[in-house]
Image (tube, rainbow, N blue to C red):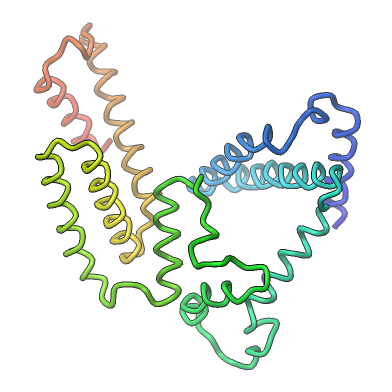
Length: 256
């Protein structure tokens, strides 16, 4: 509590005495907050505890900043936000705070009814999917939608069944590409990616993490290609695809 109080005092001082901090609005801070979220995510992926600790502090600062701006406008303060999240968590966890405390529930039991509990909130979302932001990155948005649908029982009975859907969507992508209809191709590629994300979810694979891992692998192998091309005194634009593939395969064989 003392540390949190110090954070609030620091925010007060900066807002009152620092011209840059005083000039900020929720709109100007938002892009920086998005960056901080990604930096925290990156630290978690790397399992860098020192960076995780640092990035949590950075994100906390932003959250307090929003609350301070709202307080100045007479909208709400940080205490209101804290009360709301406490009330929400108590309502959503009747097995901890409510009439289900005596029942032995598994993590799966709780997950299976989570979305239905949320809909019953007095200030909850009007529909199951209405709480998903349009601005959320598409992979995360798709995964969130699928998880929320699963929480209401709308999911594949057997995860193996998803592969028929993936195959169906792949065939439709090929058909759309043969038509050379840009709008139709975009639609079908989207359907295919949604189906693949769904398959990853069903097999307990984080699609964002999986794709990020592949991007890192591509970066390493392409870096090897660039480095060894320059060593030969050549530019990539001067090489044939076969020549580039040969160097690429060298990097792959080295485990890059």
